[in-house]
Amino acid sequence: MKLSDISPWLVEATLATEDRQFYDHFGFDIKGMARALFVNLKEMEKVQGASTLTQQLARNLYLSHERTWSRKVKEAMYTTQLEMKYSKEEILQMYLNEIYYGHGAYGIETAAQMYFGKHAKDLDLAESSMLAGVPKGPTYYSPYNHMKNAKDWQKIVLSAMVATGDITQKQADQAYEEMLPFQTRQERAALSVAPISAIMCEV
Image (cartoon, rainbow, N blue to C red; front, side, top):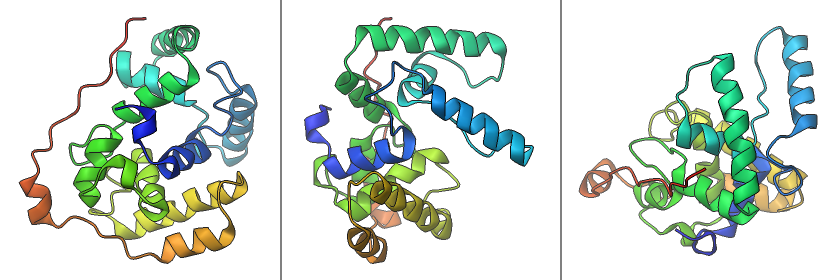
């Protein structure tokens, strides 16, 4: 799916939450990494991450989820090569077509259909801010599994969008209060939800 076929709200919500410096870095957010290290050391546990969208894409496309130095080195290599070979728009497009949104839905088009019964291009601000939070924890932040967790994270997404100037506080408040038209269990069962193959690329 092309980036132009995805709701701008979803794109902005994803960038505001996952990688605010996306268009300014070359795959690695050094300031973000330093900030995350400081916070984690202060809290004495990992409470903040600093992976860019490109790093997440490299991890999802090519690597396992093991936590080893070898995997970190490979992630850095693939991240660098993705940034060298593709434009920012292409990387963002691949990310949104690849990321997992829970319940068997890979990619934003499948997620939009599964959660709301509509195309990704038709998602409004409230729906976009809800979906943008799900990949953080597809089980924990799924509105079908834990509505309170999902709403709490939606508020974080909306606050991030206010901070980046994408929306006003009034728009954020209205979106948070909007009653979302989630698909029922029966409607979801009627969908043949199969993982969308990622837009694979040779690096």
